[in-house]
Image 1 (cartoon, rainbow over the protein chains, first blue to last red):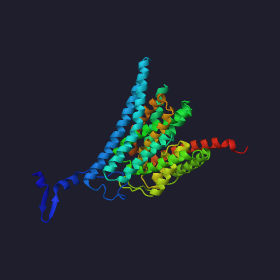
Image 2 (image 1 turned 180 degrees about the vertical axis):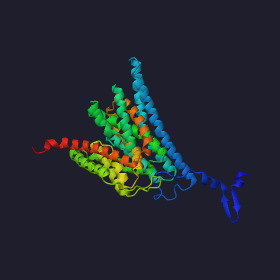
Image 3 (image 1 turned 180 degrees about the horizontal axis):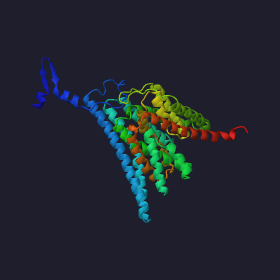
Image 4 (image 1 turned 45 degrees about the horizontal axis):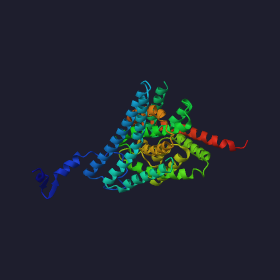
Length: 148
Length: 258
């Protein structure tokens, strides 16, 4: 019933109610954007707008999660320093700090992967290629011992 | 006591980094070396770790608020990394003292422009369109090279480049720079970590402070007037210029005629 009702004929112009509702309820694209003149029409449908928003939400969550995880582990390691010194405490501090540092360093790299993937899924292959290029060059730089 | 002071230094660096998109290394390295007597070879990787922390902490909020331009960031990031690799390769052929001197004078000029010249009207952060991509890409390439040659972060160069050169609103430029510096910072730290130069005892309190400062800074930034941010940025550029001129002068002094 709902499917049948989604297309209503008003005079000569068929209107897809489902799409019109989606277009009205889709969040406005009031963000800092540079793609409008470069790829016209890429984010002009509600589905693409939703994917764009979802991609940014994932990047934001990822960055926040990485920062919080690393911060909590570093904070826990600082807390352990107040305990009486023993081999176990020393090892625990070391493990916590190494895990925190790893979480912190991996976060921006994963962010780059997520950004490239989400832009690729939106059809913006140019930016997906840029992200892959940055990752590849960084791997070369780190492998060669250069400071990027 | 030292622990609290290190956390406080981290808070200040995180706040500045999040507000201005410079990462905070500009403040942390001199503070650690001069204030805490940390050797420079330990202070630099610790500061880079804090740049990554500041980037992650602040960029999460900026991406959520749609203040960071992910596409522009990716474009300039590619040029920056290329520049960093080229800079690393030609480092042996150039005299770092001269490069530092030229960069110091250039930074001094940019900061004077920001402090003294009347600001140009900006595009709206919601509807702006970056212009002059060739300048932005070549400037980012140079920023990457300088990062490899002199150890300065790209933020002090990229924010004015985006803001003045590409017509990007200052706050968007700062937020985008914040997003970009995390990746390059992480790669730089990885290079140090492979050689065992990262002192996690030093990094732990700094990162805790930086994350707290970046969290506050990223909430403050959208509310602070752009004119105030510009002036703060110009002051930070003055610090960078002083560091670079000092570095250049120190390197050139032995060959100057007596």
